[in-house]
Image (cartoon, rainbow, N blue to C red; front, side, top):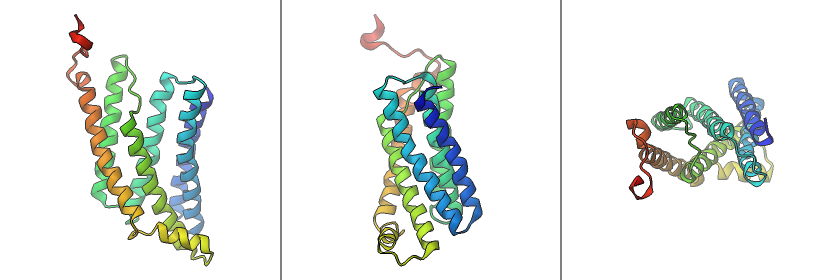
Length: 203
């Protein structure tokens, strides 16, 4: 178990802590959820950075990293929908896309392949995390009610009717659908059971 994969596993632990914080339904719970989620989101960058910089990219990491991302993001969207922060139909689309791609990855594993996250998928995850963090900041600071100028500014920026929250949500939804279609189209040979064609027709 190398360092990037260890960080990825820690993200799963942080996801469990995040879920525990949401269950508390109090100011302390909101802050536990926010801190755990932010650290987990930051860890997503670090495991990829260390894996690429030090040549620690492994098949396990390629499989585990996107799964950890999906568990984190899906947990957050389910909570946000239950709390009224996100339309249920958007959460359903996001969950459907993630389950679909997870199924595609399973098919790839059975075919002896590993599907790593592509650039569109990374942007999609980044926007989803941005949206979730703004909502969690709003919940935490709204429950706190602090007069601290910095907290008041962050509370204003994370407000549901401010541009950051809705823009990040709609962009995240758009990239969720586009990247999902891109995965399916690029790897359509896996769905049909055909071998991918080699460049130039394969001779």
